[in-house]
Length: 134
Image 1 (cartoon, one colour):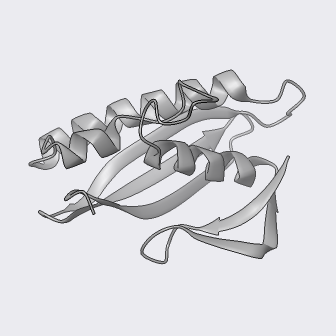
Image 2 (image 1 turned 90 degrees about the vertical axis):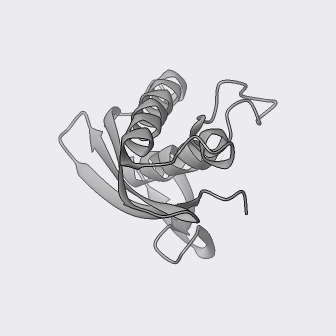
């Protein structure tokens, strides 16, 4: 599988139309997009997305305990969706997703994300999620 390169470290996702990713890195990118997608917002894949965004904008992330709780549910939701939609012929599949809040304030939450493959590849990404609805 190949995909357009997405950089999540620039303060928000940035598409690089002149670059591509392959293999497990495509899975990781799709996983990060899934984490940031609002649950139920995709009419083609109704199970895509997590409640992390909704929880944040509804005021449900008020401290590290609630941030960890929301992150854990989002990780499980992302893992479930990703493994249920993986191509059957992919050799390196997604085995684990870990999300944990690294920083939290009233306007944003920095999320540390780690994706582990069936072959032991570990890819970590840090991204920001707004907690004020903008």
